[in-house]
Image 1 (cartoon, rainbow, N blue to C red):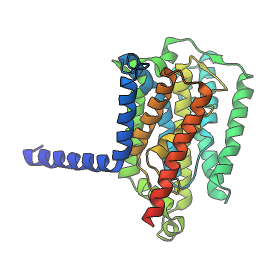
Image 2 (image 1 turned 120 degrees about the vertical axis):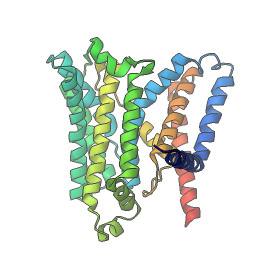
Image 3 (image 1 turned 120 degrees about the horizontal axis):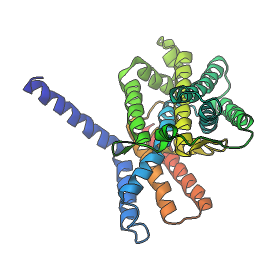
Image 4 (image 1 turned 90 degrees about the vertical axis):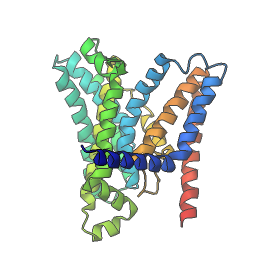
Length: 330
């Protein structure tokens, strides 16, 4: 690479960074304020900014951001996927069962969990593409179906796995970095490439902005919706395997409410619930805010019941800001 090429590349990265900061300045400031508050608060100052706690936060937000990557695409389309939490439970139980019950190799178990997520995502995508039933209703139905299958498969009891190989996926480290975080980096890169560098990414934005216009311009809207819901299923399947590994067991109750945290990360990150706009970069900051908020509420010993109230208020505030922004842009 010549000096001129290096300078051009550096300039390009600098311009991209400026655009990113400009687009996400508000939520970045909110994130920094939250971190500063937890760092100086007498109750949390000695426990928040420690290496152990920060790695714990990163490990916890990883599974949420897997979901949020798929959910960002779904919401850009103007839809929603309520089934991801139940997919976590089903895929985690099946993957754990492959190891504990059938003594299958770890890669086969991981693949089985991801395929379960893909299968549910394909079902969602096919049903949504072939009918006019809203995604909310379709994924609400599959949420209950997947949760039911998880209970049927386990009989309501956890599927325990105690091998070190299994625990490495969700509770291990690659060097000093937690394994789920390494997986997250790969997932974010793949998602960003799809959204920003591929024809499918451009079509997702086009369909989310105006499905009829996209159809008239030659875009196969059904194929786009099918892909997005299948991708969301894969991300939920991956999250289920990682979470089951972190808990040392596949549990039918795992993933309860996970769809709400994923939706919160997406809307806090600036993706419009009206569809057509949103960036994975904003979702990353949104996921960090939700993760740090959860961690901070725990460190402050806030009652878990009140935590639901706080997170609900955060989602409502983010949606309201989106409403104001869309109204002012008209």
